[in-house]
Image 1 (tube, rainbow, N blue to C red):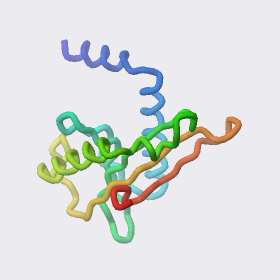
Image 2: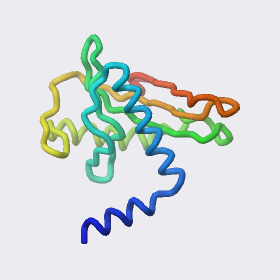
Image 3: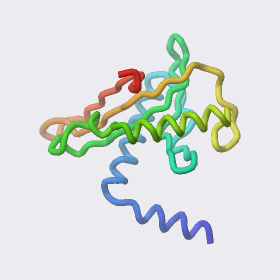
Image 4: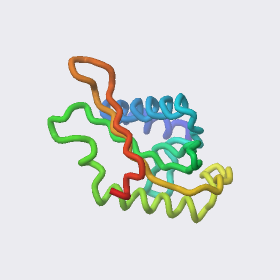
Length: 142
């Protein structure tokens, strides 16, 4: 029965959500290509979610929570504007729970590294050009 519910939830994803999922996959691929280690994707901590948890090899090596924001266009503003106080609060709560557990949801121990939160914006290029990525390191510091 649980498998049926999962498939129904996956089918219920809107086209915009599926584009966001694809953007997260592209960001994960770019991080891997840059030498990062992706520890997990779509990690749930109660009502809060971490899009990507990865290790930036540095120096210094850092545990990074990566929030991915997909924008189909700039008609309603840029992706950075969607990283508001509410989203920042949800991420802080997820990071707090992650650190409290000292492990991933599957029980894998977290590496003992400093932690930061990055923001990656993905949006279409001009005139059907390649996608554009803007990576903001330590996004809560600004």
